[in-house]
Amino acid sequence: MGLKVYTGGTFDLFHAGHVNFLKRCQEIAGVGGRVVVALNTDEFIFKYKKKKPILSFQQRKDVLDSCRYVDEVVENSGGEDSKITIEMVQSVDVIAIGSDWATKNYYAQMQFDQDWLDSKNISLIYIPYTKGISSTFIKGQL
Image 1 (cartoon, one colour):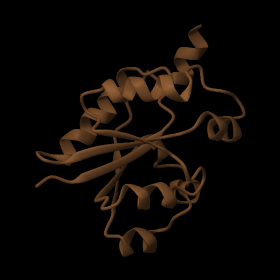
Image 2 (cartoon, one colour):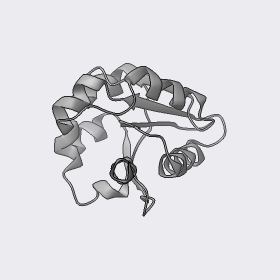
Image 3 (tube, helix red, strand yellow):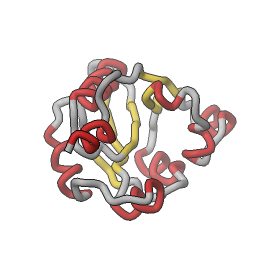
């Protein structure tokens, strides 16, 4: 039986880096596993990044729903407090994040700590970031 892998993000201007990341999530989930993406709302993105995404929430959700490496897309309804959405998803085994977060305080960003993860039996893993591509880079080329 596979694992339930949870990840979250904005996924604006879906690109090869997103595909690589989600493919790796699916590999970690394994046969019978599931990949659940918590998608940030437009309001949360504006609050956090001080700018609106290029694509609307529904457009970004439609793209993720069509990705073969994603089993379910849920709204990041907790905003800054990711525990709300993680608990809503239920039975998460692994939280996967990009390695670009390795030098940032991901715990503070998500408003949980290792004790909370341990109490839920959730592992946090870093997936190598695809260098040379990002939504920010693409926007800079427009």
